[in-house]
Structures are given as structure tokens and as C-alpha cells.
Image (cartoon, rainbow, N blue to C red; front, side, top):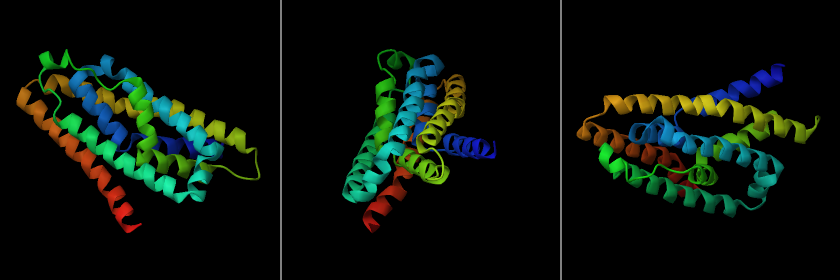
Length: 201
């Protein structure tokens, strides 16, 4: 029971704290509303859980054996995050334009996890910290994945609800444009530690 509580607390802390996923979901909520952003939320939560399961099945060891692969993935992740920041910054800030613009899809939300540095840090951290060679590794891996799947929906969903509630506050085109620019800036800032790590490494 203590083990399950520890895993759950870790999942809550890592899912609810600010990061690229939560910034994207909140921004989508502001620009497209709750209902149209649910596919993105689902893609993020399910996509991360699949990645977490696969990390436990050997991706973490693969990165240790081939560090260049991890380096390449980080570089791709930085470029993709900057691209997402650009899309957010230039996204239409009025509701009429948003009728012709689609929010990020389930597939994009799921695939984004593979280039999301924070997602990899959390996944590898969860597997390395909460699994043991003394117990059934596969059972532990499945349990950790299930906990994250159940916890991530409400934790990341809070950001979507908050964003969709701001949609009614940010009715002014200028205010919504500034919000999009601010979220794009936060996304760029989230890349800075990864860039510094790439330069140092």
C-alpha cells in the first residue's frame, strides 16, 4: 500500500506541475474551448502512458547503450517545441478565425510525448525509482503505467478546465493575443534547460 501511495504521489506531482503538456492543453482550452481540446488531452495522457510502458520494456536501457540516440531525440524535441511555440504565438486570436483552425489532434498529442524532454525524464525516473529486481518487474511496470494513466487525466485536465474558463475572460482579441504570446514564451523557456544540457554535453 505504501508503494502504491508513493507511486501515486509521484504521478500527481509530475503530471500537475507546469510543463510543455500543460501549457499546450491550457492554451488549447483558451483558444478552442473544453470540448474541442479533449482529443489533445487524451492523446497526451494515453501517449505518455504508452511511452512509459515502452520505457520500462527497454527504451531506458537503449538510451544508456546508445547515448547518441538520446541526444538526437533531445535535439528533435527542442526544434519541435520551438515550432509549437511559433504555432501558438501566431494562432488566430478571434473566435471567427478559430472556426477554421483545428486544435492539435489526439495523434499529435500522443506523438509529442516522444520528443517531450520532461516526459522522458518523468518516465525514466518512474521506472528507475519505483521498480525493483526483487519483485516482478513487468507487474510493477504495468502498475506504474496504470497509475499514471488514471492520474494524468484529472491532473492535466485541470489545466484544460482552467484554460477553457479563461476563454470567457479573454474575449478581447488583444488580450487573447497577449495570452498566446505569453504561453509561447513559456514554452520557449521550458526548452532552455534542455538546450543548456545539449551544449554542455
